Length: 315
Image (cartoon, rainbow, N blue to C red; front, side):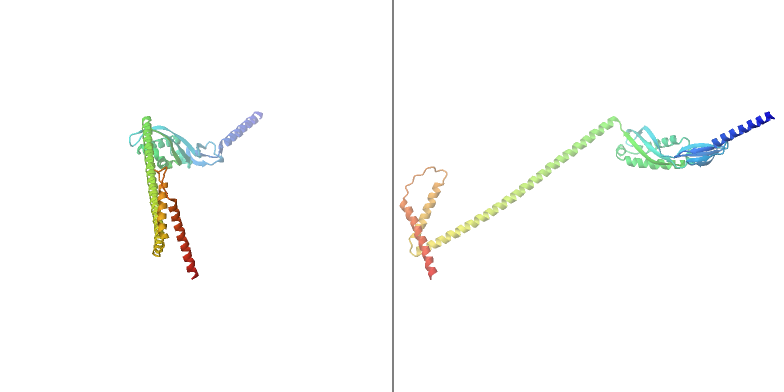
């Protein structure tokens, strides 16, 4: 009896241990950002979401552990022949995310390898249909085309390609040197054009300034001539008035008027001789009495003019 009890106890303990192991094996903890596929006798049954889940021991097992976070793939450098037969080296990166774990697990084998090779193939196709200048200047357009093509091709795999970026485009060294010479020539051309344009603007501004100066000078000469003419007109009017007055005095029998004219001409001649540049010292026999007499005649004319005005005022 004791032997039988020991055997039963041992068998029970074995069953308990096996049950514990089976339960432990059936409990699955799925971390955040992951999803597990469950297979029953090798066939897909369901998907385990993040958290604690239970599998039927022996019957079910975890098939694939899929990372549902966005994944980055490095596209290795490869040589590409452009449309204008230029050899360039290109590399890039791909961002994708698994949206449907069962499709990503069972629709394609080696998902990352498939995405990488599909991207490299389309990079050669898209960039090989473009000229070198287009490759260097339209990188955003290239990225957009690659994203559209690769995303459409990978949709049946249950993934979403979110971004494709071309990192480096490396032309051959001789081509880079030729492009550098071309850029330098273009810069020199622009500099020469700007310099010529500066000279042109300077000449235009100078001509405009000279034109304005000539106009202002002509306006000044016009104004000066007008002023001179006005002054001569007034002087002529004054001389005419003086001549009229002297003529009236002579007609009235005043000999002093004649003396006034003679004295004025005499004094003007002396002043012209005195201010002449080619005369330094001048000795002339001048009759002081004649000059004084002429000045006296002028005084008599002034007195007579004032007396006439007084008489007229009294009348």
